[in-house]
Amino acid sequence: MKFSFIEPKAGDMIRIKIGSIYHYGVYCSDELVVQFGLAPNLRPGIKDCQVEVCTSTIEEFVQDGFLEVAELDKKELKKRIKPQKTIELAKSKIGQKGYNIIYNNCEHFAYECVMGEKKCSQADDLRAFFRSLPVVNLFIAPIKDSVEESLYPQERQDLIDKTNHETTKLERYSAWKLLEYALNRSFGYKIKDLTFKCENGKWTCDKCYFSLSHSGGYVAVVVSREPCGVDIENKEIKDELIDKVLTKKEKQQYFLLGQKSGYMLEKWVLKESIFKTLDKKSFNPTKIEVEEFTTWNKQITLAEKDFVVAVCTNTPDKVKVFLDCKY
Amino acid sequence: MERTDIVEKLTEVLQMAMGDSIDVNSITEESNLVTDLGLNSVGILYVVIAIEEFFGIRFDDVTFGDFHTVKDVIDYIEKKVD
Image (cartoon, rainbow over all chains, first blue to last red; front, side):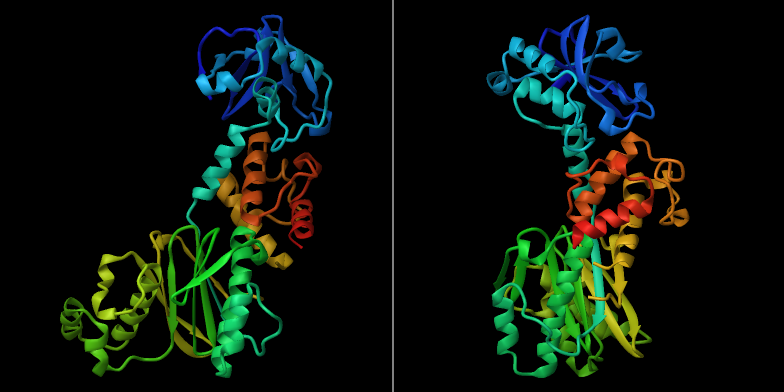
């Protein structure tokens, strides 16, 4: 819906800017504007439960600002309630209460009188803004001592059941339990409200991105609104494996290094995290040039063991680490 | 989610919603939303929507005016996320 500085007609939705928000009403005449509560600056100290649909003149509505009038496009014009009906509807609501800044405010009221349904673009815009903020939350925790309960979805539980190796079983179980915690902690999602898929060993869900890793008795989970990958390792990678791990360019860098310790492991972990963000079936580290991706990595000591953890993400500066969560 | 997690996350959300206009280090459970944190109606709108988005809850059965302190908000979130 577009707003312009034009003359209002009876039955129009109008608004006025107060600070950084808008106050809305239904224009009936210069003598009558129906609105859900007066503008916030004109009702200091009034509680939401006291706010009711009320009237003012256009002069009182505008105060010292500039009146904006909704200009409906063809589709909106077709859908809108006829202006006379809008006025009748607005007037019939005078005295009604039930104000709620999020779900039933002045914009919901005016929009409903004109379009027949409640809508608040201010709240919708705010939601969109918060959803656009980058979230890259990395959770690291020790594995659980035992498999305590069955997992959702059944496909993940089946994978756990089929795993005979006790440590791997616990790591897989713990990674999923930590994921459950991370999704709730980061986005408020309950795991049973999400739909999961597993293709080529990669798990995905319908509401956000995530990645799992486990090593040396610890599990790591990263959750984000954008594609992401995580890897955690605590085992050194031997120099003999150089041809299996590094690209030609990385090998050149490696040979020039005075201190080589940790280089191979760091690259390996970074490459695994990158691979997890890519839509590829097989992992070939010698084909992944770390420098071509945006990544984050850190050395962490947990229970006197040294780990290297890496995250591949578009916003590495937003990585937030949560250690030892009670999941 | 445990209460300590909720408190930590609420602090993040308040920072996200209010930016530099709020000193998160001075926030306690007893902080009054209006007199201590300086939330006005716009601030409340920002905070409520941010809480809804990041905690996955809806303030549909209450108005934010019913809350006076940070503790009131935490209690409500705790009840809702369970």
